[in-house]
Image (cartoon, rainbow, N blue to C red; front, top):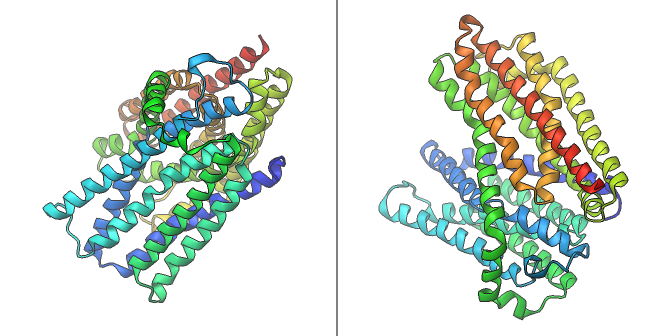
Length: 428
């Protein structure tokens, strides 16, 4: 199964679907079991959990790039190569991050900053959400040692069980017991995945507990990548989300924000599909890169971009046929979308395909400094699209979408050139 890109892609797409269902189920269930005030607090808790998870600074991408290179036989890199002692330190860091977040949450409860009658439920849900952090580390580590299919199969089972436990709340199951069981299942799956990594790498307890030696190695070899990865993550986050705020400052008309929100929702769903498809081919891409197999790498890069383009074109066709109806239904007929607006949104999707493929592949190869440089024009275009569109007067809505789509087109061109440079680096 691990060797089959098709099977791997299918199970990853199944996990994407389960992730979307779980996100919907959380809202569907808790909006019905909590009163409105408690549910508003619950949404803030979700946002805080997401912030805590994002504070890992791209560490999971770095560990994949380093461990994958080590697994493929590049172990003669002197003091800068991967060391097994790194694993224990990195999981300790993630555990500390979650503990600090929980401590902040407890202080907020005690101080009365978060008003709720169910602090235990909220703390359990926070821990359950933050379990995705070590889960992501376990996923990347297992994927680096050719355990992609194993993790995806485990994760499918985990997600189906957690969705079932969520829905059982509506049948009378105590929400605290439901979340506790979900947390227990997640921790069991993570522990099993870590045990598989432990076995495949031939690790011992001494490797996990050598915190001093591991920390010294992490400080010596991770700080540069963490800095570039953290800045890249922040730049991308602002670039993708800035129009929500700049549009709100520029106009009181809700329509431009709804237009952007529609694009954002479509692009997020599509980018999850792109990630699943790229991750299915990453074992072969990383092997070709580290083996300096330029023809194979060229073939795989073309295939990855081509498949992403096909999905983007399929999504474009679906939006062209049903986009106006979907927009009207999604926003309860509070606004409408014109065909030109829809075409501009559709025009950004092929560019998004190139950007996503490039980011996912080059992050897996540890090229964070290059990604950071490319992200800066995207950040600038995203921030400037609204002020420039204001100069167009009554064409503001269409002007903003046109400028944002143009930004995506330019950035996709930069990413295409960076993929070409990646191929040439191997060719040398």
